[in-house]
Length: 467
Image (tube, rainbow, N blue to C red):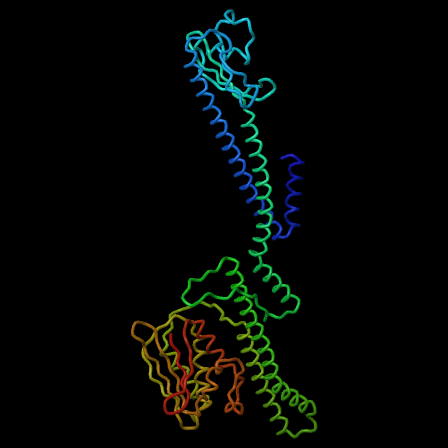
């Protein structure tokens, strides 16, 4: 490609980039409608022109037939008429094939080789546009008798005037169509891109304010039962609103996580600093006081380490993807129950399990069950059992229930028990960070399982894990 062609293409691309989408859409719609309007007007002009000339040709044919009937065997020369005037009858003359037989008087109409060819029978009849006496005329040359041709002419001024008038009217209509096309193009671009304009304004406002609560205004829904009438732009705006809602929820959860984490970390960090300061003045403490401070410092370090690890796992909001294997749940439940008994000897754990195999990650499932048993044992009074039941379900899958006989979960607390750092009023005095049940639900969802909490019949809390 030549340098000039590449330059023109670059200039065109730069022009398209500089012009806003609304302007380009308006120009495109205007050009499309204008082309249609101009094309229709041009086609109408050709149709009108053809019809007028067809009518004139028909008149010439009838005039030639009438002249031949009135003069069945006339010699060369003028037969009738002067077609210099609009109201005059048709001019008619006979032309021989042999120029030597021409009359002495000149012909009224032009005679050429085509006329001689028709007279000699070598050419078919034809129509010609001529100028007679300074005026436009239409002439028919046809066969008349052996060796002779008949020429008939009519003034074409009326036809020419009609064609010119039709051309002017169609040009005005075409110009009006272009103006209407420009208005329609502007209206189409303004109406069609209104949701995009609102979307752009909302995105710019969010970028400026960093507030994802803004939404794009959507058209009101139709009456109930009516079919949905949503175009692509409206669906785009709806998808953008959905994305903004997800973003707002994510930002809110992130802020809540940071606020809750800072609140939960403040107390153990304060205790750590206090014990560290005590140990720094170890010469003032007795050996028993130093040992208690050291033990407390180690315990608090373990609590903070566990809390930070749990925060890191929950902050990812997704489970790691190690290799999944077929896991036998019964031995896993027995192992977690034994660990719970060792951790809280005063709370018996009763287990009833079926043989069930599910696809999962053993370490993560162990963490899930341990959190559930830990939570149940923490709220159970001494001597009250924690009941664990694993049942195979008909058609595949399994259901695991963990029930305690503690105070249970208040109805107003049920929707929030799996939220991060949420702790009911009765649980605030107990140890824990409020992350165990949130982590349990996250692990359950990663294994395509459902974990719900409910009030147990007769008191206590019941957690139901369904695979």
